[in-house]
Length: 177
Image 1 (cartoon, rainbow, N blue to C red):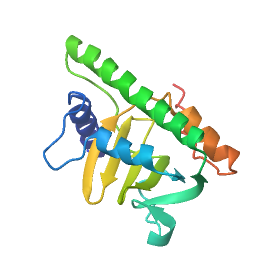
Image 2 (cartoon, rainbow, N blue to C red):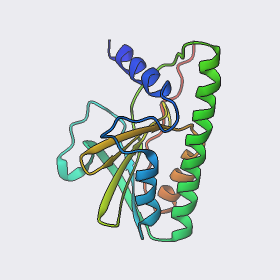
Image 3 (tube, rainbow, N blue to C red):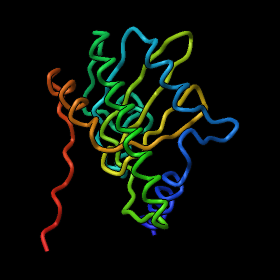
Image 4 (cartoon, helix red, strand yellow):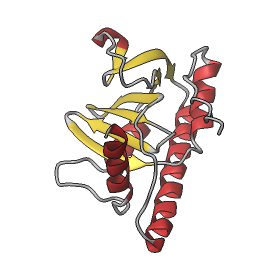
């Protein structure tokens, strides 16, 4: 049942046209604006186990924090944002092409291994990213929005974390048949 719910959420998310949103949901451009204007980001490595119930002081958006680093160098933030923008654009294009062929299928999950917190212009954005199943959930205050990405930005995010000595949770190896 849980897999079916995840699949349904993934298909619903993936079937939205790029930029689609409800009236109270922020668009990616709103979250991106805060990320772009921030002078530093907190970049989190998260434990993707949905059954963990971490102490709130050890959590980011209810996910256990394995470690984090502060990204102060503007060029590093720009590179991460460009990678994420590219991943979102690539996935939106892939979904558009797939929808032309018929209904989408997928395994669906939400096991984020990456998070970002940034503040600019009096607004804070928090971002949860699951490169495995592609959702990007972002929060501006109490408002939540979503986008989808492909896996391409993960290497850049992992590199920043591992260069800072932060351990990133690895995906499980596929089961052999």
